[in-house]
Length: 148
Image 1 (cartoon, rainbow, N blue to C red):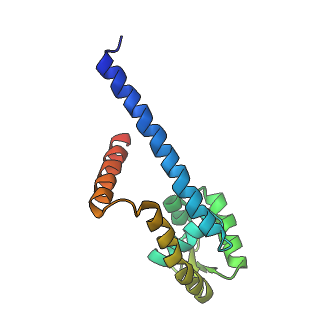
Image 2 (spheres, rainbow, N blue to C red):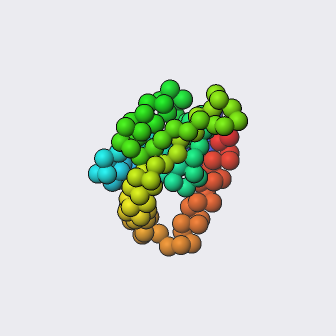
Image 3 (spheres, helix red, strand yellow):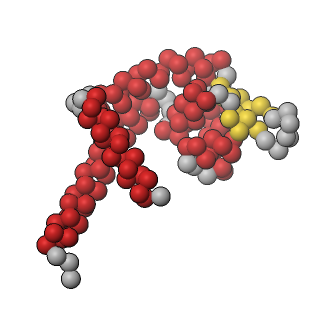
C-alpha cells in the first residue's frame, strides 16, 4: 500500500503530465496553423526547415531526424519537388543514396517564412523570463534523459 506522501507525489506527477500535454497541444496547434497558412503541412515544413539549417541530406537521414517512416519521406519529398522547393541529387559515391536539397526557390521560400515561424514560437513562451526558459529547458532535458 502506498503512503500519503507517495500518493501525493503520484498525483503531482499526473498533474505535470496533464499540464505538459495541454501546453504541447496548444503550442503545436498554434505553430501548425502558422505553417498551414504558408501552404505547407507540418511534415513538409520540418523537411524544409531541416534542409535550410543543415543543407542537403540523404532521404533516410531526413526521416530519422524528423521521426517519420522512410516511405512517408519519399511522399513528402515528392510533394515538395512538385512545388519546386526541393530537388533530389544522387550521391556520387553511392548510387543507392539520394540526397534532398533545397532549390533556389525553396531557399527563398523558407528564408522568407522562417522568421515568422520563429516569432510564433517566441510568442508561445514570451511570458517566461530568460531564466525561466533556461530552467524549463533544463527540467525537460532531465525528464528526457530519465525516459531513455
